[in-house]
Image (cartoon, rainbow, N blue to C red; front, side, top):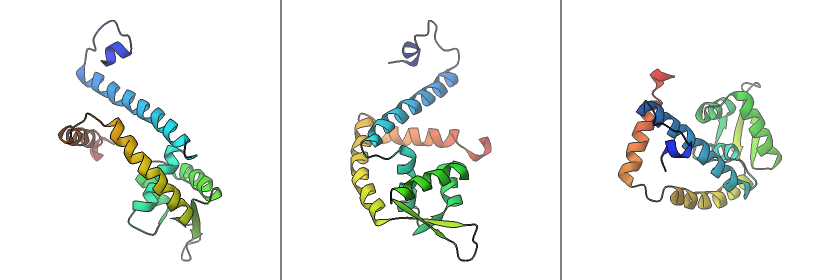
Length: 155
């Protein structure tokens, strides 16, 4: 369905770029809501899942809070709360940096890895379901378009 019909607008958009931007934002909101419903079954939030994925695939056994914040594009205060909640549930652990007591390293626990593997398998199926009907070529075009929008010179 077109965005014009979804929003019940009486007239077409005057700018294709504005329509495209609103489509991106609306799709993002749709995916966020769908993600919330999906992750609720696993008693984890999308943000917690993303943090666990960063820990699993981050290229290091443990990462600092600053490294995680940078990769997730959130501020350090938000990361602290996320890590606190993951630590309370035993999914991640925080250890002090012996060289600098102001820094902490965050690591996935065995319990976190086990839970993540369970959720990740279901998540992969959910992604396939959502992206059903989008070809490999279309996926690559979407990726390239989103990368152009996020160019560093625009931030």
